Amino acid sequence: MQSRLRALTTITARTFSTSTSTTTTAPPSEFPKTLDGLRARLARESPTLSDFVYSVEVGTKKKPLPKPKWMKEAVPGGEKYVQIKKKLRELKLHTVCEEARCPNLGECWSGGETGTATATIMILGDTCTRGCRFCNVKTSRTPPPPDPNEPGNVAEAIASWGLDYVVITSVDRDDLPDQGSGHFTETVQKLKALKPNMLIEALVPDFRGDPGCVEKVAKSGLDVFAHNIETVEELQNSVRDHRANFKQSLDVLVMAKDYAPAGTLTKTSIMLGCGETPEQVVRTMEKVRAAGVDVMTFGQYMRPSKRHMPVSEYITPEAFEKYQTLGMEMGFRYVASGPMVRSSYKAGEFYIKSMIESDRASSSQPPVS
Image 1 (tube, rainbow, N blue to C red):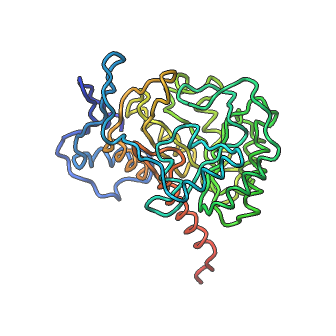
Image 2 (cartoon, helix red, strand yellow):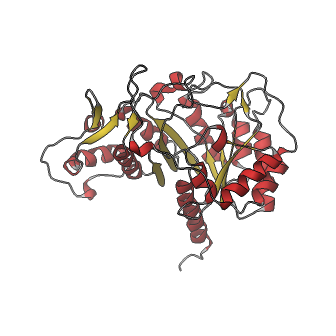
Image 3 (cartoon, rainbow, N blue to C red):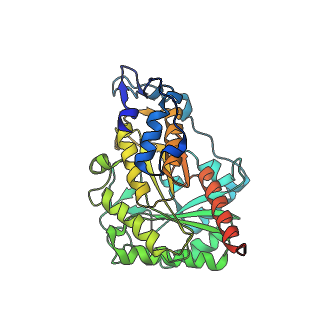
């Protein structure tokens, strides 16, 4: 696979390239459903994949280049958007949508084309104990203690918004004995008590790999257990806080799958444009899939401020499409991949919602005799 996905560096662009040999496509039956089989099949089918521009440069500090046209952001708006924002201010709640300056905020809160309105609520305060180089959330070694009333307030607020799917996430709380897992669990359980049919995704920190913390949240009643590996394995040390690492994150996702009730989905996300190579992305995808993860998302890294890690390059929509196709070939149940995709993304949540509902409908049907 690596030889089929070589990156060609030029002055202004990188090309995601495949072989131009004239071999014929082999019948799918020749290849087993394994990663080796996938590599072999893609190698044989490479003539169907034409070369295209993989990315464009960002320029230099003295001569920055404008963002490509596909990175333009939509202006937030709509009745449901206004309603949610007002309620957040009243209850002094935080959303990662606002804290991280997500470009899809208005689309997600209003429901967009799918009509599935979603929001990502951030619990355990707005101050993180870690300092990842890409993140805009403020940091401190000693953040304020969690609000004991927050789980109830969050549950009541979300229940009143008419959302179909909600993502509950948090800052890292290395200062707490249980890393905040109890707070997470209480929030999910209170919301499920008020809205049993609402789908809940918990986008959790790594809990420093503590199995007890992972088990507690995985069994809380959530529908999707999400934890982001953020970047390829090779760039973990330069992108994430030193307390986070690739193996620890994969272990958390594996444990969640083991502890959670059958039918619970696991999910992760990585940013592109941090300096990774296509080969590194593919290797990372393989390891994530081998860990049993169901859903993976890819989005363009955007620098929140000049204090943060610079963008290495802008990955083209065509390259994102290739990663989506490859991910589905690898066996992920769903892959959301695009420049504006974030780990909690309305369009992806619409498909995950449909997937969960379909699974439940199938499992409730009596077996055919």
